[in-house]
Structures are given as C-alpha cells and as structure tokens.
Length: 140
Image (cartoon, rainbow, N blue to C red):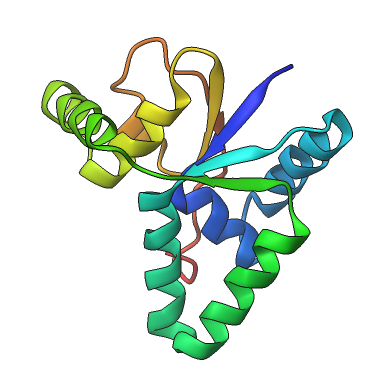
C-alpha cells in the first residue's frame, strides 16, 4: 500500500480547486478505498490555514478546515522536537524551505510526497514525488 504525504501546496490546490486538484482527489479516494489516510505535517497544515485566512478570514477558514478534517481521509501529524531537528537537518543539507522540510521528514522512505513545489524537493535524493502541474499566475 502506497501512502501519501501532502505538502501545503497540494492541500491548497485541492481546497481552491486549482491545477492538480484532481490528482489530490485521487490520492484521497485511493486512501479511502484502502482504509488508510493521507498525511500532512502540522506545520504544513498551519501554512494552508494561514494562506486561507489571509484571503477568506479566520471564521470561514476555521469552518473550512474543520469540514475538511471530517470529510477526507487526511491525518494531521504533530511535530515533536526530534521532527524539528530532522527538518532543520534537511533544510541545511538540501537548502529547502524549513516548512517543506517537515513534509520531507514525514515522507521518510516509505511514502510519496504530493506537491506542486517540485523544484524544492528535487534536491532531495531518493524522495518519491507525485507532481502537481505548475500553477497558473492567478493561482500562485
């Protein structure tokens, strides 16, 4: 069974019905069919929340995110001090943004990272990616 980890860009595309949303829908469908869940780091979850709150306001964002947790097979994974160090090491070694490093750390060696930010993650050897299409200007 292939497990998937979403980064912030993947979840944001899903929520905004942007390019690649259909790929994320298929990830959720596959997880549901297998009785599994996709994963997202609490750090990446917070990134999505912040992006939406800037555009929609806090109330609407809180409602949307709560509904999301009830309706899709997605588990938000908390961050431990060890996770923070692992992410910091990944950031230092591969020069990727710190929040993105949490997604990489959660992916480990057994999971596939779903992302639109391919250029950040291609620097990490042996990381399996499910690539979403490049964003159009209006989406970015």
